[in-house]
Length: 351
Figure 1 (cartoon, rainbow, N blue to C red):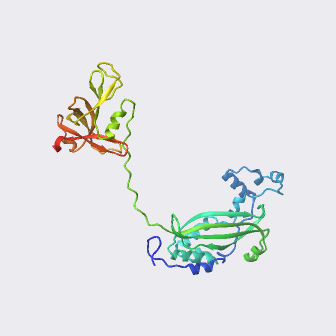
Figure 2: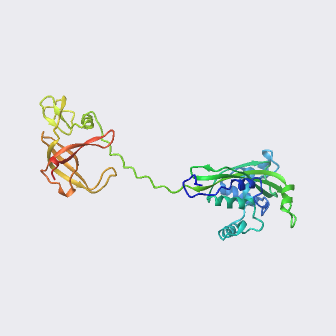
Figure 3: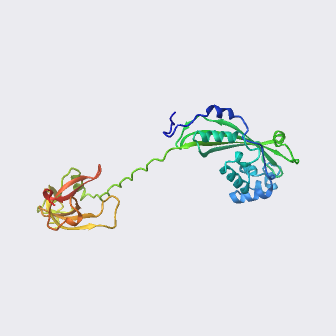
């Protein structure tokens, strides 16, 4: 069968996984130490939690409690193994020891993880955790935790990949004493319920890596439009090269101005240039570079046959082949839906 994620075919262990639902993940876990003030003080300092009910009996009694309580968020911390035990467990797991090398630890959890790995779901991410508290934890409580596999979902398609959601329920009870050689199962059955935690993970097959999207070219910088120059850019969008003309004396001028420098008239209209001219001067820009342009970037000062000059991009020749006095003509380039500009090339395709 083919995999939903487009990878190699994987076996379907739905029936075997369903048989594990409701089974203990492993043996009960006994907290190494009873709830104690020292660990609570370390916790609240590390977390920056300033609620006094965790550190003084007086504050706890003021809100109706018998004495100081442990922060509820410490629940799982009391039964977690220390760093050294965790490192030994990881080393055993990497060496392939069943049950992570912990005596008696082989249970439904290890079987479930092996079946999910066989389905190709070798990656894991925690999705959510829900805790319900029956009563606060107080100094002297020693926790016993028993966990069962509560739910294994059908195969799901997620943003991370194809996988299954696994929900584990852990029931915590408190005992006040632990006789030597005590049976942890009997302790768990006799203890006082204090909390229940449901922890959900997603075991999944990662999606195959996809090619990174091609970098999108930035838009060409927008011109600064004013009442005086807007006509020029509007004309360029229509592929017209317009020149401002004084209505009083007929003088052509570029760049656009609000009044004529000769007769001072504020009245003007436009004429459409032929787009032909010659290269009056030019420069080839190498640096600094702006992402919207290609480099080397030749930029010319064009003297139009109507007599005005304008600055524009040059195209159609290698940068080192441009020469002052060369005949050029305008071609309009639509850079995007809003911006069109004249670009000058050698006249008649010469070059």
